[in-house]
Length: 70
Image (cartoon, rainbow, N blue to C red; front, side, top):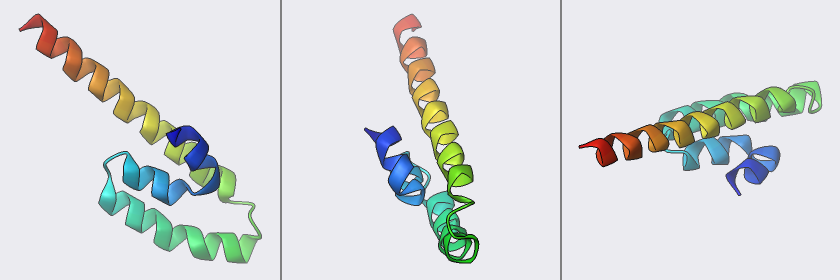
């Protein structure tokens, strides 16, 4: 679900992955980038959001695996 949200609103998606400061910074950069480039920079923000979502998922898997081994 978060990947679909990243397509439409990357800053909100980043915020929901547990990175609130980065989400706010990306939002501040995202709005002027969309306005001045006409949406050409939007795929860059989508890619950033997808990478952060994937990284958060991997971190949760690793933490779960470590808890099982204890």
